[in-house]
Every structure is written in structure tokens, then in C-alpha cells.
Length: 123
Image (tube, rainbow, N blue to C red; front, side):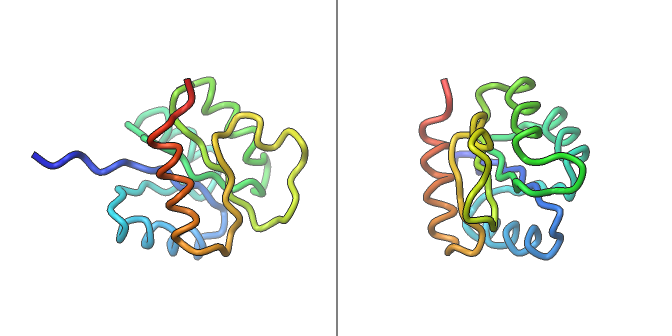
């Protein structure tokens, strides 16, 4: 029997970027759930089996660091990878995450980071 595909939750308020990222990840063999805002993301995260999260930093209302902290509280062992188009984030932005990916890099870079956190999740 084949191993189950990892399920990712992708969170980004940029709908087009979110859909492109989800399509690429699905083509690479992941099952992808998507959320356009932090509240929707936390609801999906709370009620679904998630293997890893790909989380945008800059979103309206609350930033990705706030969402990562809430997710870490709910399910401490689920790996979280922050993504951002910004070249620099605040010092504590990645405190509750397991990795970082710059938006606009190749899908290979994104999947390399995801593969690493899925193989070596937080303790």
C-alpha cells in the first residue's frame, strides 16, 4: 500500500499566489488545503489532519508570526514554514516556525524546505 500524501495547509491573502502555490504543490504529490485569511487558517488547522503549514507573513489584521504562535499552541508538533516576499522580517517573526521560504523562488526551493521539515519536525 502506498504511503499517504502529506497534507499541507497553505495560507496567503494573495489569492492568485495561493492558487499557484497550491497547484504546484499538488503536482508535486502533496494534498493541499488553502486559506485566504488567518481566521480561516486557524479553523482548518484546528479541525483537519495537517502534516505541515506554509504560512504567509504579511496579511491583513494579524501577521504570520501571530498565526504561527496560535498554531504552535494548538498542535506543537506540526511543522510551520513562513513565506514572504519581503527581504527582511522582524527579528522575532520566525520564532515559532521551522523554516523560511522567500516568495518568488523556484518550486524546488519551496519543496526542499518542506521536505526537510516533514522529515525532521519540531520536537
